[in-house]
Every structure is written in structure tokens, then in C-alpha cells.
Image (tube, rainbow, N blue to C red; front, top):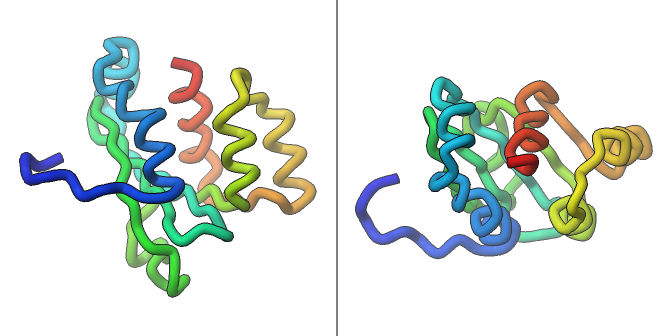
Length: 131
């Protein structure tokens, strides 16, 4: 991130930022993701802001972006590798739980509560939250 004053991150992006940005101080994280470049878009359908999680060679940061109009979140516009989209309550349920189980997430995908695009890129979230 640049040295300029960091723009205030709102909504889901603010919550995600507080959870993942401390990983920048974690040596395990730096070592594991030193060669990784990924962008994962987390969109709360019922919120005003989406979170773009950017992993760039051992550093991680979150950008907040308005999710209306929908074209703001298109892959061609944002350049995301993976997308995880659901309601805010489901995101909070996932983020608050101590153990994020793949089984619970698969169940929510099958029932249509979670929409995923680029699943292999979204699975990096499981690795992040295990650190």
C-alpha cells in the first residue's frame, strides 16, 4: 500500500480488514504466501460495500468498494481471481466461528446461500483463517 493516508474502509471491508491485515506481522503468513498474487472479492449482497482481499507476495490488504451498480464488481472491471458472495449475516456467521469447516460452507453453497466463482482462489481464505 502507498504511504498516502489510507482511505476509511466501510462495511464488510472494514471487518475483513481488521481480521486479515494483522497477518502482515505473521512470519508463517509471509513465508507461505511469499510467491502468491491473488485477489478475492467478498460481496455482501445486502450491504453497500464489497471487500477486495489482495494478497501480493507476502502482504495482504483490503480495499472497500461500492457494490452498486453491479457492473462495479465485474471480473473485467475489478480483476478478481475469486468471488464469494452471500448475505452479511452469513459472512458474519462464517467470520465469527472459531472453526470454519469446509462441510458447512459446501452445505451453504448447495442450498444457494453462498455463491462462489473461482473456487480454488477462494479456498485461500481457509488457509488465511487457519493462521
